[in-house]
Picture 1 (spheres, rainbow, N blue to C red):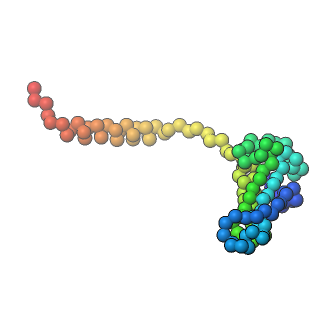
Picture 2 (cartoon, rainbow, N blue to C red):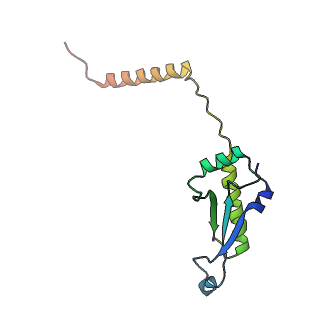
Length: 134
């Protein structure tokens, strides 16, 4: 499924990061952008590609490329490892097969207990009323 050889299909680009760093931030490209072409991946089968295209459709570009950026750290190397970790977590989450929930019946004892409590509550409220004198 998800393999370390998938890293070979990733494209990385270093860009200038915004935020703290003073004058140094204008000279160094520490922000890392990761690009992954889902449709042209050789390691994913057609079913996995369809699943990724469906589940990640809000994150993909028009060309079907997943683009992730990380500029949390001042270190380009650390940002690269962070964006790779984020990529693998997104991919594993998207490819996770959800188990369909089997609807179960409410047990008879649970229904009876609810009705019993409801009846007791009703009687308690009814006992608060003043008695009817006829």
